[in-house]
Length: 311
Image 1: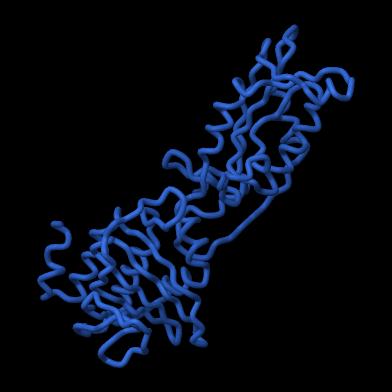
Image 2: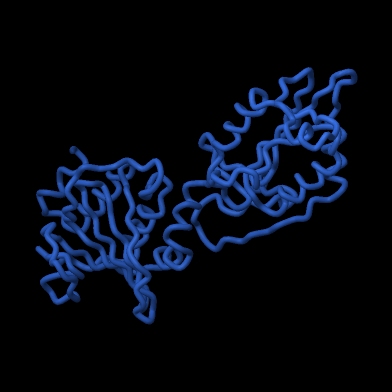
């Protein structure tokens, strides 16, 4: 951690383990001067390109690129500005790539030569001097590579759940557990001993303490979990939840309904005033054994849960 945060470079999130502090630093002229001193373009070659692998569309990186473009104007073309990639999904000052967490440092590569050019139609129409516009054959592959950066999975998780829900899960100190039939009412009803929300109860288990609440939070706040959306796997299973957890901290609560047929769950968080913050669905295909162990701890004599890790 100390090595990654050396000189205050702005590590924002490596793990969900406590309060998150954000620190942004200005890019100094000395930093840019040091960078420019390493950019040496060969004499006698007409075309020069600088490729930047920028982890995020964030203030320090953007300031750096703006100043770099200004200094290289008329000398070299700069590629890799995250602001020019509207479809890319970046984190705020860090990213996740090839299993590694990256900071807001930009990586640069230069290429010089008689590079393939594309037609400068604008100059032809305006009768102005033709510009050297480097062709897609040169920058395309590296641009696609740059777009492969994405937020750390933990950042996706925080974005979807919200800071309030994450903080609550970390602080929860008791958990009510419910064995479900997998059936649901057509209209939701309040917990009355026979149902929890709209889910029909089969059995109410023993209330679990702080240790169980922490293990449940760790299972949910796990980077292997995923959310529905672009690139998500479409499942053909029937949603039949078999267990529900209602975790508490003071007057705050969250209901977690789990289906082992789909390896999916629903989370519904209510704040201390009882305000419902909506439902969020999550898939835990890569984290199934952890939730299976929690189900077995909650209902140790239930035959259906004894064999979950063997399925």
